[in-house]
Image 1 (cartoon, rainbow, N blue to C red):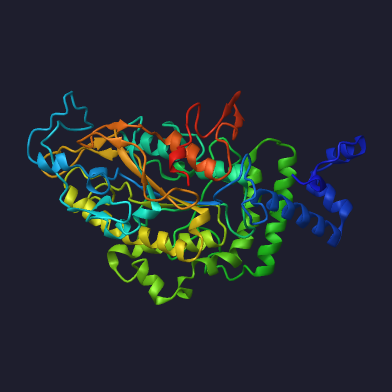
Image 2 (cartoon, rainbow, N blue to C red):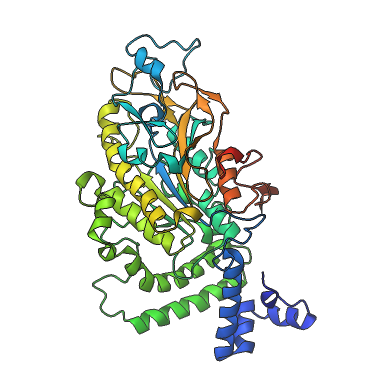
Length: 490
């Protein structure tokens, strides 16, 4: 923190502070424009300290390679052996008994026969990475991507496993990675949230908004949900259309009264971050009324850009719009953006949970995701933003190489694939490997702790030192685990 913004420890200051909040004291004694200038100076210095004045000049603990993150989350468990994890043996043994030499543990079925992917495979890029025809657009980006085909999960149940990938714990009540990044690094801008979530238009993943909670961190670090595909993308940002009696002046006066009441209430209830977050939310909402329409207005984008993201095709339009909005948020220095694919809304399948028919369900989900996700990588690169933006693609666990029924695949927590790009990531690389079936991690088993530690490292944070005292424990995103995957760092 800047020395100009530190609290004075004199008895006089302590006596005056006891009569009201520090902000009230500065306002009353600084007065008028002087108070405004001092408040702006403190805020600007704090922001500069957090962001390095727009430069990557150190991070919290060491030099940072990135300052933003965008995370794709495939809800429902995307199949590694149908997109990224090429296994010739699975093709050769297609239709034969699946016998990996041990009892096969499944979520809701018995092991069927070996089932080759319904999509063909080809090699791409200078790295020669094998990719399936389900993801032809991402296949063209392989030299930007670092693959981790040896990911493992502690759970094969969607809810706990989704929490695990987002928060590092299978239980609810823990902060999302984006909340930790917000807590550790702060905001890069004054007019947009630090952590933004773009859910699937069709609904939420298991756990709903609990996935992007701030947990025990101050509530102001929780994800702010935007729904660009809805008529009202930000809930309750504007007064109802039929409330003609609300004017700009009356709304401003109302916010001022609310802030006075809330701060008076907060002064008697120290330590409750929820009220401080509510106050901050009112202040941000006022700024968002000016900034959000511009961010969400994709009519400013060229037709070529909109086609790049697939906005001209029904199957890619929704996810493509979210990806395009994600790029607009990132270029305006939103620190962390999460984009969801898949909703937990039963049948027909609208997520990646392909128990019944992998070709049909993954066919639809893959086509809806592939072009827009690849477009975001390409667009960030073209705009010079990929170098300092980490792109993550993940899911809660993988799917089995054997069939469920005749055409589906059951849950597989023993191995799945995640990948990263940009932001100091060494493209065209692969870390670890699954076995010859894509059944279990065989080389360098990797869990979410290692990936989270690596992401924090790229942001200039030592994951063992980013802690928050809660219930007598110094909590952290990586719990008591995690190793930086140095082989994936450029």
